[in-house]
Image (tube, rainbow, N blue to C red; front, side, top):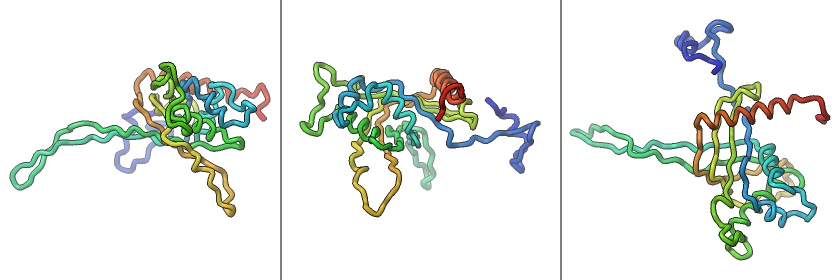
Length: 234
């Protein structure tokens, strides 16, 4: 950890700290990354049904790279601590925690490209869950189950060096909650890039030590490969 808690306690009055002694570095937002590590095995099959037949998404690993690279924004759900209240004389109140209610929706914003890879991936994903032509899932022979239609992804933020991990989470049980076909109703007077917001179900948001350790490996590899100027970076 870059900061020590004792440094933050030094100047509680002005909240201005030193540059060398008792320095405090703020958390800077905007440096976030995703890595999709598990996707449905049949996703390519159903995404290709929406393709033009040229095979623009030939492998599941390609889909994972596309989703990771085109991620612009991630909204993480929160947990709400509910309470049971007790009333006394004159309506004086006290309370104890009753349960924690976790929202189970993650929203991810993607940049769409020419060729519509995001639309094809997400729409194909929805199709393998329920084919819009017949209303049932095409996953057969005991293939229908969460392990065959859900995904797992790692999400983390870093300091501005792009490598030092600040926050890390493993998002498990992901599957899209809409087909983004509504993104393609256009106005002849409106010209702009297309960014698609997709709500995903999430079952678990792990934030344990093993998540940070795994993410450190991904972060180091991504950072080093980005600074490898030995090849063509054009």
